[in-house]
Length: 281
Image (cartoon, rainbow, N blue to C red; front, side, top):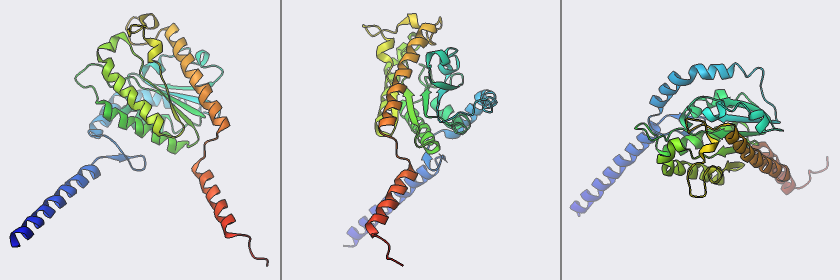
């Protein structure tokens, strides 16, 4: 009996120690935006983002006074394809657009700067396109980690404007990164999963439009670097995004999104009705 008791105590002790180690692992991970867990190596990525992007972010912030946004605006935020989109107002007309793109941004970069790029604005929808993180290099990010950063961004936008639509544009296939296209597709699958599992969140699926019938990138839609879109590419891209926005915003008109305050008001009203009329004075 003593041997059995000793064995049980030993197993309990091991379990307790293992549980404490797991708890420490999660607690020690940086937490941002009201409790959303970030992936590992957060501080290293933060330092790299600040070193690379701080000047660009300050330049974008300088535009905010002239473009504060409104409930009618579409905020388009993302990496270099957003920054280089010189015809965005024409391609997304008649929508009023606020354009906030910076270089070769990754999902982790956007997560670190979300409060400075997105939160200052009012908008009826935000369109997000991030194409970096998987480029066939040694420092490529893991698609699962990228998904956590994307979830972080979506949740932070939702906290800022619960009623706004979130539109995630999937990564476009290009010749420059076609060798890692299968891995990039994993990222796109994550984006679709996030959209399907998050209220008022949608994707723009672009792959079938930027690939030939035999599954090769349509190089006529890209500039010489075979990575960024040319004018014809932006026309097609804009058409797909604009069409999705039309669908999403029309859906919102038919089925308005219930905000937390709406839900609370409905709950209070239901409680009052259940209680019955107040006694006469």
